[in-house]
Amino acid sequence: MDRSPQRIRVPRQAGGVAQPLGQADIDQAVASATTPDIKLITALAAVHAARPKMIRTMQLDDVDLGNGRITVAGHVRPLDDLTRQAVLDWLDHRRTRWPNTANPHLLITQKKAVELGPAGKLWTTRATRNLSAPLERLRVDRQLEEALIHGPDPLHLSLVFGIDEKTAIRYADSARALLEQAAETRPLS
Image (cartoon, rainbow, N blue to C red; front, top):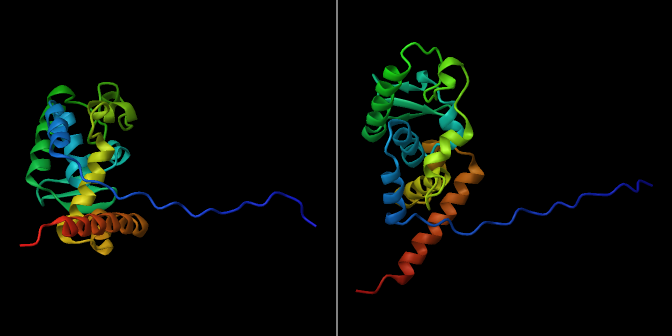
């Protein structure tokens, strides 16, 4: 008889309902984006729901300005005007600051300009670290916003952001709960 300890699988607890950011939190994040790199990083998180690691590892080839597309974590998306301008501003800064770099990553630092690797974790998150809306929270808010605007459809969220089905269902459930809550509190006319 085997007396080795057995693992008991405990189902993952369902998280609470994700809440949208308040306008003051968004305004604070936008106000903190004062340099070309931070503006681009913030746009990628807030518009394209990119995780900090995705942002750090993006390559120059992931931006297709001519066709108005951007690839985030292997998922091709339309390039909006805000992100397009942030990319153009960053590329101009990058070209001026490090004209001879061979680093293929979109975002680089002084140290990485002479190497080929991506920027570090702390560098990517530094501008929003102490805000009420750090990069991860901006990303969550963007996916929740999509579910609230286009309806709580997990398939739509998976297609738009390239997220897995469990994550898409979680955002759809949060959006559904928020929409039901709003309908219950709306005064009858």
